[in-house]
Length: 88
Image 1 (cartoon, helix red, strand yellow):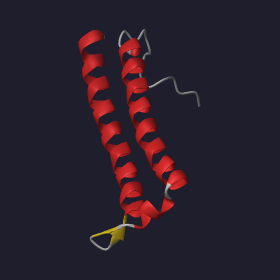
Image 2: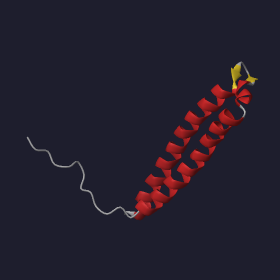
Image 3: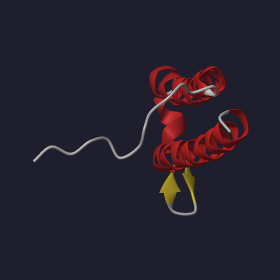
Image 4: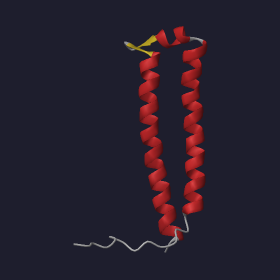
């Protein structure tokens, strides 16, 4: 029982734009994550500071996860718009 592809794939005129946006977002996330690692390596006692009952390590870690989801959502929105604009 052979099934063909769901859609016909063609040239993606937005691939260069999507790559550029993805690399910039990766660089931004990497710098923010490197900040977390740097704090943990250079002055780990700073991560013990408490804000609202949570220490900075937990807040920073959850912030990294939330920021990743925000970046993914923005990336999806920008890429979808670029595909509609450049591939039609």
